[in-house]
Length: 154
Image 1 (cartoon, rainbow, N blue to C red):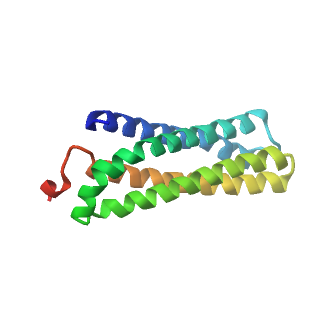
Image 2: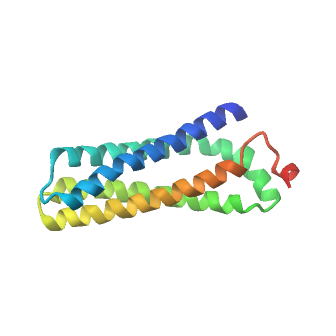
């Protein structure tokens, strides 16, 4: 993959993830404000889960290019972005697991107050992990791109 194509898909990857977090805000808000479980709350929870899963899968597709063209330059100069990227990937996996887990709990136990509360906590923790992931992603994208030798940047 050439640097321009990688940069395009990496940007799409980040924008989709942020959009997924924005959609996830709906069930977080409605689960706190409404006593029952509305159909749209359940739907937007699953839409948010899909919108978190899509950029996660796109990240898996992009990772070999990162590993082959970006990571070696970061490793050569021991740039902090190298470890922040690895942290970002682990947080993204946690985000996905928490959001999908929250959607499953809401689907199976959302008719009870305890089920809605458990789902809200899972979704909120997933949202927090996602926002942290996004922050790390913005930092990493700003300093680490293929086609730009990091050794020359220092």
